[in-house]
Length: 421
Ligand code: PMP
Picture 1: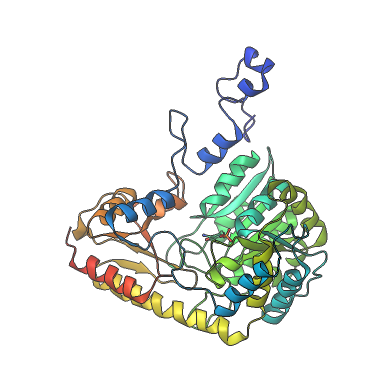
Picture 2 (picture 1 turned 180 degrees about the vertical axis):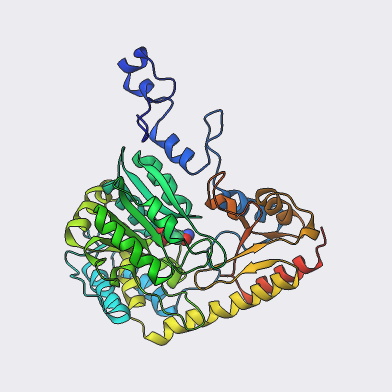
C-alpha cells in the first residue's frame, strides 16, 4: 500500500504468494527514488543531480560551485586530534550513543551558544552525519498514513526518506522575497495527519533563515496535533551580517517535541567524516536509536573525539569561519550581479540562489546548469532539484555554492561575466 491507501501498481493475486514479486512496483528503494524525483519511467533510478553535476565538472574541467563541500582544510587542532586518536588505537566500535567525550562536548556546545541544557547520557546521540540522524528520525516516527511536512524547496534526503518510510510528503512553500512561508501555507500543511515536521534554518538551498514568528506558529500547530519537529541545523554557525542562529528548541513549547540535528561537516569543513548528532527529549532519542542501531550501529570512532575538540574551540574560531564565508558570499554575489544574474540575498548557509540573465538565452534550470558547466565552465545546481514538478520552486533559478577558495569564486565570476550566451 502506498501512503495514500492505494494498492501498489501492478500487484496481482499471483504476486501475493511471492513477497518479493508482490512489492515489485513499489519496493522501498523505488519509493525513495520516486520521492526524490529520480525514478525513470522504465523503473531505473537516475543518479542525483549532485553526482551528475560533479561528474560534469570533472569532464569539462569546470569550476564546481555545485555540491556544497568546502575546499578548505579543517582547523589544525581538529585534524591533529583525529590523527592522534588513530595512532593511539581508537579504532574499534565506539559505544552505541557515541563516545562520552563527544556527547559531553555537544551538550556543552548547546549550553554555551544557546543556553540549552542537555543530559549527555540520555538526550544526545551521535550519528553517521546529519543524514543518518534525519533518516533514523523520520523512519522512527512516520509511516504509512502519516504526513511528513517540510519546507519547499527542500534538501533532497527529506523527500527520499519520507518515501522510504511510506509516509506522504506535504510541503510548506517558501516564497520570495526572502524565501519565507505564509501563515496560511503553514496552517494548510500541518494537520491531524502530520507526524513529523522537518525544518531547516539556515536553509539549503535558499540561504534563508526562518523568521521567528513562523517558527512559533509551527510549534503551536505541532503541539495541537502532537507532531514531532525535526530541526536540521547543520548550518547553525554559518550565519552572516551579525545574525544569530536561534535553535527551534529554544522557542516556547518546542523543546519537549523537537529533535535538533547538526553535524561537524559544515562547521569544521570535514564532510567526509560523517559525524553528526541529534539531541532532544530522552524518549524521542530512544526512538531514534531504535532505528539508528540497525542502520550503522556506530561510526567514525577516531573522528568523534576530534569533533569534540572542534566543538570546544573558542568562540573566535567559529567567528573566523563565519567571517571567511561571509566574505566569499559577498564575492560571489557581486560577481553574479556583475554577470547579469539577479540574486536572492543569503542570510546563512553555503548558497546563493540566482536567476540567469535573459540574455544568456538559456532554457529551464536543468538545461542551463548543464550548458553553463560546458561553457563557460561553471557548475551550479538547478533549484528545481529541490522541489517537485508543479511546486513553488522557480523553474529557471540556479543554486551556487560559495564554500570554495576565493580564487575559484573570482574565476567563476570572470567566466560568467564574459559569457554572453
Ligand atoms: N542537511 C542539510 C540541509 C545539508 O545541506 C546537508 C549536507 N549537504 C546535510 C543535512 C547532510 O549532512 P551530513 O554530511 O552531516 O550527513
